[in-house]
Image (tube, rainbow, N blue to C red; front, side, top):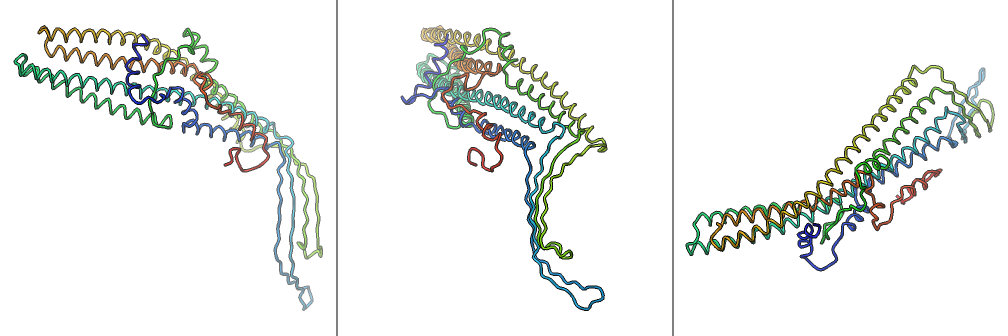
Length: 457
């Protein structure tokens, strides 16, 4: 079955030069490394990593330095005196202030935990985007192979119809057939030319799509096989794997944690806050009326703020956060239902593709035998030219269905693998350096400063 299914594709793909053909693994590696959508999602996750560093800043002191300076011209007239006192001053002051929050209703701790959940959810979203990109890459790869094979099949069909037309003309000149046979042959040839043009257009479109997804135009592509060895044996097993591992379900579960922390953060506005402020300053010539040349100050002050009533704003924000929390729980149920439905559908499509491939293989074999028989009978005068043309049309339609069935068979297996949540570079054993999201996270999590990103931008 498999040999027959791949025969047309192999013939089409190996007809060019003898250089090494690009495999589907090569295409997936290139997509994993350079796909713009995937790289954009990685950059988005790196930006999400910074939420943890920003939340941790709430535990750290806030330090500010203030400097003032200038020129001041004074002219004072004392009561009962006719003389004035003038002075040209150069006042300046410098101060250092340190603020440290001691208690804010656990707001900072909840913000840190919320940010960490956002990072974990972002990683799952990245895994979901990776699955979509790799599946798009598989689809684009198989579309190029299939459309190239369809072009070759249509070229062979046109060549056959040209030969039939030439033979029909000779038989017409000999008086064996009528002008109707010649017209039928010409009509089928023109239809074949139109079908060839349509196949070439689809082939060009598939090449452009391949370039967009993979990042480079297709070369000579090698045939691909389904990944049945990686798929579960039963539909129930596939559904169970999806519930445990699908990135959409995992991300939606983590979104619940994010929403729960949002409730705690909103509730923090109802608690008192306690902080301490330390400051030190020096001022010179800043108060000429007291006759003080320099003034030094140092202080440590504790601040306690107890909210009493804010017009109901904090209470409203708490209620709002609770509604969002309820929404995320409903979304999780919806995501679970959607992914399970997708698995069942993908399973059915994958099983159906096996049947379609078997049927298409048998159909081609039967159509080839039928055409050969009709041609012999036509030579013996037992069949008409139209019978030959119809038999050839049946054969080219069967070959086209076989090519499409082979493409669908491979794509369906990868689609099922994606539906259960395992279509990633690790499960596919792609030979490519791993993009480790934790590397950037640990680089920025405890950073106390700096403007340059770890990548140097």
